[in-house]
Image (cartoon, rainbow, N blue to C red):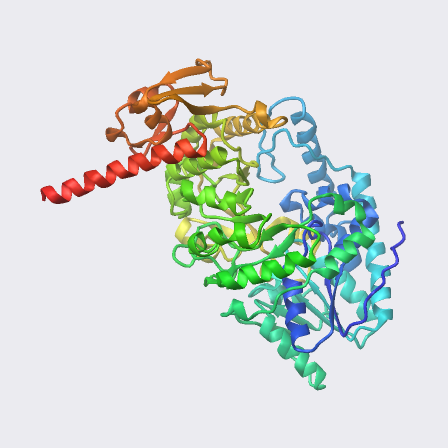
Length: 639
């Protein structure tokens, strides 16, 4: 067993703990917002990163593997189940878990040698060329270290005498939180113990509360207000009796105090200095909820829980807070926790960032219908990577998801990102209720043609999550036999309220892609070939790029490996067809571009596939817009 480092636990009235397996390279925003609110009201609150301590025990690289294990393993919960519930190893069904690990490793081992036509029964997801394998002995060691951490850290926290100790649970942190709070309570029964976070949203609070009597209060929902109410009542000697304290969405984000992440950066430097060599980030939010979701909730999304209503900070507030936070941080990287960037920021915030918050490296989630100008402005503001929520390359699938975009818009964003040098984080999803195999067949035809554009992280099966329309209204989508993911019953105590506790669910429904195993395996192989083509030296990635060589003359370089000429000279109309496109009947060289695979026909449009330097692409798109506006004016005049 590894000894804990010298903790140097701070003096405070309230200790908020971030348990494993929270990510190592950025702080937990929620606990620091609560810390800032409490400090502004005169309370002494400290944040303890138990996840950093655990990584110091098991090693940072191994911790990263554990944190990125298959979602349906609930590995974070399994590792701490014995410490939390006195269960057997990894919960209540060790043999089932070991079989899942062995099945995953067998697929990963064979996939390292060849592409597989394999559908994993253990996960319901296609795996191919998976890099990470999990040695059973390493998992046993990690579980033993989890027990050790829970015991020693709880003893140290209890000895420090904090009147209030809370923990945050998001994703797989419930068992780790309970393991710690239960032991703190055992060492010091007078300690008031709290639990909050995304796993306590709505009815899930009842499920979490059913797991342990050692948790005095569960905070459900946005808790800035109710947390302060609790602290004030506690200070007056009248703490609330209700075990579940439900908060309300914050309607004025500008009124929240600026978070201070000193506890995180100090503890990383003290306990896990090797992580400082990795890019560290600051977590920050500019909005809550989802402006698209409150209009048209994507069918599979359960991220917003009961807080879908969209709220945003003013641009002035964002700039003031970023300036303050980054002045005290050892990094200029900011990971925005927003579900979606406020749309008005394209005009109110993004243009100001280069001058007012220079040298910024910012990550944002975006809706995929961005224009070329918006992508370039984001790049200029420091957005080197965005997560656009593309999810599909077929309009029928996008309509099924209620994404509010067409396939041509997703392809356009992929092209714009490559043209300015921006990286994208996205996934292709499959296995939707009511989907049709033909949608994926069209996607399979498209993938080789866009191998020069940023590939998805993976082809991933739909996850059916709480709060999504599929969960809330299953009958509308033909979803039957809705039940918690099997792993919940293998991890948590049999008397726990799993129906309330679970976030991930299983069900039965009709799906064309689930029935088309060979087709989905073929699409999976193409996705991984696509990813392989992007590994290594960026200069060797496939290209389909246009450059101007003289007025009205262009060169098209094609290294996609499709057996076509690697270099073609283009005229003006051909360049517009492969870079601008438009309704098929209005693009003069559409037939030529489609025949040669430089564009595709989607929804009656000639959808261009080539990239170009930003200035050239902007010029040609602007020329097409000007022409369209002139045509519109002439049509109006003729009327």
